[in-house]
Image 1 (tube, rainbow, N blue to C red):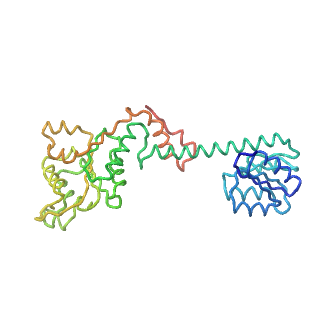
Image 2 (image 1 turned 180 degrees about the horizontal axis):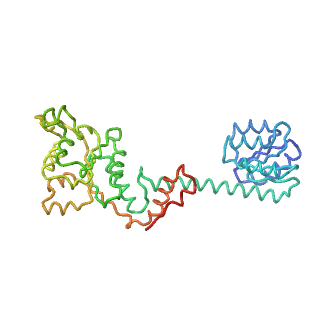
Length: 351
């Protein structure tokens, strides 16, 4: 009894050949149907997907190559085996160039043809399974724009999912280049604030004299050059997420004002008299050991505990070496797009 559920379409204008092929294939495969012409085959292809086509080159109306092209346009994954009593090298090459799996001349050995069909379907199945596994692997190794599937990264992904559901302030720690902003963005994009602003601020890149104005805004005339009212970054990020990168770089004076903003969820613009409420979530990041900064008196303890409600520690790559290959492949694919295959020669991966 046939057990394989592959769908096979036989196309030949010779009735005796159709009957032979249908009888031969039906012993092993459940779903075998026939078409007596090329146009009939194309009509059937539009209504159904087939795993394999067994198609004669010479048909009564159009050629088997026309059917081959139509089949590949309809479903590129359909396997097509061409057969012909009028075989030539040119026709065989053309058929293969248009995506035929094989080209079998008549008269053919039935056992050899059966083996060719079986091998073609086996390879199709393996290719489908590989695509499924590749897709599953991509889901596993990517979390937004973060790449890695080591146990430590999987733990971080789990934390991101959990923290995204809350409004808890988060402190992300790790060495430079470990992807702290990517983690912050992932939390924001997984949260109910995803449609609101994500304001990324490099605290180490803003001169101290401008930091208060940048954070909290200012009123017209508050200082020389303040020719108009300006919203601060915190107010611009209402109902969104503010990411304070390099939080350990801010001065003690700004720490006092930041504490008020974090604690009371209000800001007072420079030169202003009123507190403006702001609904923002704070995510901070640093490559410093803030506990030591607190002990040394360089960072306020109360601010530290306000920002560090939950800490995410990002491990350096040397502690998750299983991610090396995945990262290398990711960057090869990313930077070689549009550059041709030879661009791979320009990359050297070291570890």
